[in-house]
Amino acid sequence: MNQLSTSQRVFRGVLLGLVILFFMFPIFWIFLMSFQTNEQILRIPPSIFFEPTLINYQALITGRLETQAGNLDIAFMENLWNSVFLSSSAVLLSLVLGVPAAYAFARYRFRLGEDIAFTILSFRFAPPLLVLLPLTLYFEDIGLSNTYTGLIWVYQLISLPLILWIVRGYFEDISPDIESAYRLAGHSWLQTFLKISIPLARPGIAAAGLLSFIFAWNNFVFALVLASADKQPVTVGALAFVTASGIQYGQIAAGIVLSVTPTLLLALYAQRYLVEGLSLGAVKG
Amino acid sequence: MSSTSSALAAPKSGRLRKKILPYLLSLPALLVCIGILIPFFTAVYYSMMRFRLNLPYLKGFIWFDNYINFLSDPAFWNTVQISLLYAFLTVGLELLLGLGIAVLLQQPSKFNNIVSVLLLLPLMTAPALASLMWKLMTNPNFGILSYLVSLLGFSDFKWASDPSTALLTVVLVDIWVYTPFIMILLLAGLRSLPKQPFEAAALDGVPQSFIFFRITLPMLMPYLLTATLFRLLESIQQFDIIYSMTQGGPGDQLMVFQVQAYLEFFQYTNVGRSTALLMVLWAITFALSNVFIKQWLRLRERTHGNG
Image (cartoon, rainbow over all chains, first blue to last red; front, side):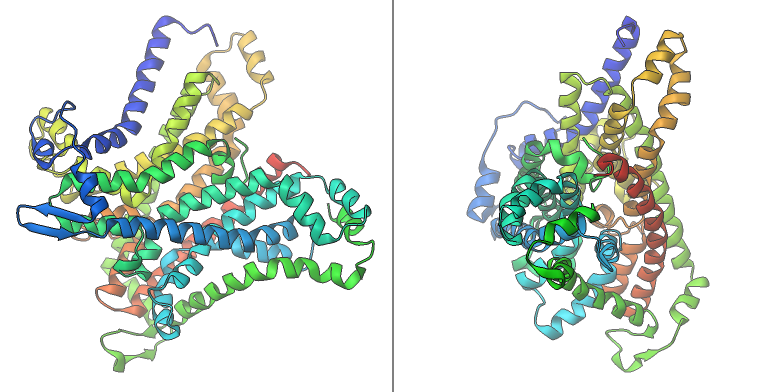
């Protein structure tokens, strides 16, 4: 591929430049906005040169927003905590439920096994509201409406299929001979599973866990339907915050930056596994 | 693999334990999911009822009347039309763009790898938050994009709040979030293609365009199909971006299935109509997902080989 002419090379460079501009600019711009006062934001023409301020982050973290109209209490840090708590609990539960199941589907051919695996996979593709709307009525009856328990349970719809199918692929790639050898040395099935199978599949388990954490964090519709203000994660909370704070654009930008930073950092950290995870194990990165 | 598993459990534990072990391992996961199947069947039942939360005394079983009413309901056909338009427009454009970018980044150089990692960031941004970012950028008072188009002479460009540009704006956000998905699948596909056909073609002096259309594209087809079907499945159900940007408006410009069903349920409290609408969407996604899963299994088989 070294026979590219100079003009072709320039053309490629320009195209790549446009691609980077389009995909990176929004993140860059909102990041800048989060360090500006409202006056700086409203200035025309907009400028990338300004004196950065931390007041937006200060207001979000202390939960008190001082405006000309008076003080406003904001619960944004609570939303951030809800996101952390809901996503990590959902992923932990999915790992506890999903890893043994993934092992069963990878190692044993049993009656209904494949049917069960595909039923769980099919949840990934059904319209979420179809389940969520009747659930709102049920949750009221069984006392689960607006509880972390109810939300974490429903979040399994996001994380469980992902973990099940990615980890299954990893277990299938491990040769069963290693396990057999360990069993023949007199260890029980459970010991073999914990000491041999799980450590060997650890990269897959970690990747699936990180990815499903990102997807749980990014989810919007589940909590929109099932959670009230005090249980809402950042995705829903940010929208409510926009409505409530109205024209506090700097705070909105800072809120967005705080909300997306965890997933973006995780994505950069786990990027090696992303391709495989996103395709549910169908494509190797 | 099934043959080796028998050797695994044989030593002491006996046949019965070996038989129930896989069920024991998968049962907890299944139970959690069965809890979710119940509301699904409830939705099927509700979709055949006259059921409004604000008029409980009217509640009754009416078989397929909700569905039959759809046939003569222009709002329903508007929803079908706009959902299909949205899905095909977004997936079509993302496919073209994603393929183009994947080809640009095909050579595994350090720079190209950094760019492909950076392009993951929009995909990992929550779509609901991405919409807020674009909302800030298209704000008529200070939005940078509104300012830029005003320099081009469109001084009153209203983006998502104008009926004539609302679809374009949400499609743009969708493209920003999801093009990287298609790009990284196709990039992984491109880099996994065997080298020989390309070397042979280069030796024979075959023109680049011929190589692309006659060798690259056909060999990339399984990846293209998987990515397309996956995105179609998601795009026809799009809720987050549209709801955060416009809540289905202006007017009924962007009333796709899930947004319409959401408003039907929470604003008009018409449970029967809302669930019937979702059942129609479910039928579409069910058909699509069957095609997708076949395609996905074929590709997965190739990736993981025969164990």
